[in-house]
Length: 484
Image (tube, rainbow, N blue to C red; front, side, top):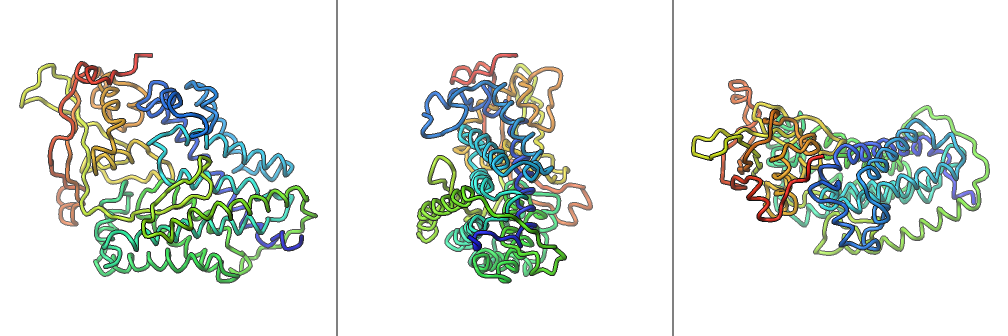
């Protein structure tokens, strides 16, 4: 089938695969380095407790067959090693079937992690990585011409990511329609980056331009991804440019880089005048063509649910319609917070609490805390605890499953939990009490920054968690993990 092969896209496929493998590597590293405190056997939401109440058919994966922290670490580090090998070109150095098995192994390993990750893995980019990773299994390698149907599936996925996000904004917060959302977004987004303060202080007319440009790039440009060349290439370039703008303005884990990878599938390098020499390929194996076409048909059938969601007035964001996280619906920031509320966690080593008790603040790696500490760049790495702390500031309901277990672990200086933090104010012994206070944060202005060196101004609002000790938490069923 001559129409099946698209040899002119060999460079685009190479870039898609390498970038996707790098993002898999990031995801596996984050899992390996953070899981013990979050979902390990002694974690805040332990996997064994989850698998005891949720059957395999609802969350398929390896950890229903066996779980131990050592096994989870082996899965994570194995996925990281295989991802790194694919970044280095392993997939092109082995036979086609071996390359496909490598990509399939990554998908199975990461699916196993996501399906037991609970609230820590409830982000849309987890499903997006799995959906893109599944399609990568059928992209072929250097020994075969890029399969046109699978490239079209990647373009279809990029369309759903962008168009779904555009629709949810248009139907959601009124500030998107009156072009005022960017007055607030850079300040109130989950994890500001090094340039977010400067983006926030752009003139208001530029904020309106940002909002209007968002509607164009998410509602009109994605249609171009599905049109013939050269329109698809130009549309993909616009998507890449806008995603790089988002990379510069905040920390959104690997969402932006993954969207860039998907958009690259629509790029025909020749349309950009790049000196890319065509490659000659042999006949594509019939079994590979059959598999790719079967996957294409399956994706088209499964697309019914996300399409129905997109056209619905009750559109939802980031929904998986099956346990394998295939052909999902996406979206982001259907509503924008007008103020930023942060949960400040503190401890004391005093036995008796009085109004003169000295409280010391815990420092987080990514979320705002010390007002003189400039926001840092962490994306595409994902700081899961910091992201959930942002949701906790919006409503205590978001933190109900894990916040008290978090406090219990601070009260015993749990090393796995402390590794998720930037600063432990009690290095010589655990605190006797822990508390949390809700604060209002806002970016300082230019004058305040010059005079005080502070990037943030914060005001205490009210108590978020009353002071607790180990005995208090034990009475409500939250005992710290036993010492190792």
